[in-house]
Length: 134
Image (cartoon, rainbow, N blue to C red):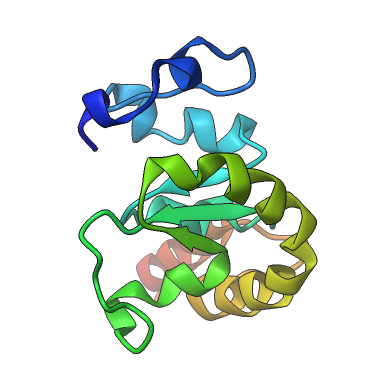
């Protein structure tokens, strides 16, 4: 996103943080704290929806995404084409979230294997131990 296309008012708000490329933009710092995911193309949305929340995707390239499996995660929330649409889409994303919750939960289950009472690290350690003790 070209920072010059984002209205200055969004950079000055207290409830929106815009980061166009720091380490925190990729290490899940913001994902854990955010109430809405907003972005273009990022696999981080899958981590974000582990705790289902509203999503907004920005289709700046006007990609025909609806039947493109590379953009299947854009089914997890609202899709806009211009920053000017933010004023309308943010309340809509919050209001319509329950329409997207089942899609997020289904896609999360498709992407992540989870077991009750164990973590991935614990299962990996058991698998390594079992292999080494054969």
